[in-house]
Image (cartoon, rainbow, N blue to C red; front, side):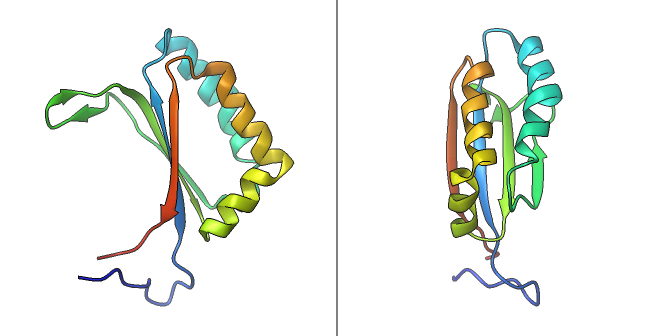
Length: 114
């Protein structure tokens, strides 16, 4: 099986997955995340889509250690790298340290259809 290019949509998009572990204060996290961090993140150049998980995150084995998962879509991995090298991207990354008290993992990759 191979990964197929998107039909007629141009380049294969790339995504960054930001997985926030359960914070010390979930209500304070949510308030800060949606009222402060999301507007900062939307300023990152090249950001095309921004999705977040809703409700509790679970695994097949039960509860997950994650509180919220964000998926940000860009046109390419190179665009992600440029975006996070920009002042806006650096500001968004630095802001994570102010509210992600439970820890955070960030991974990026090209995505495709199989």
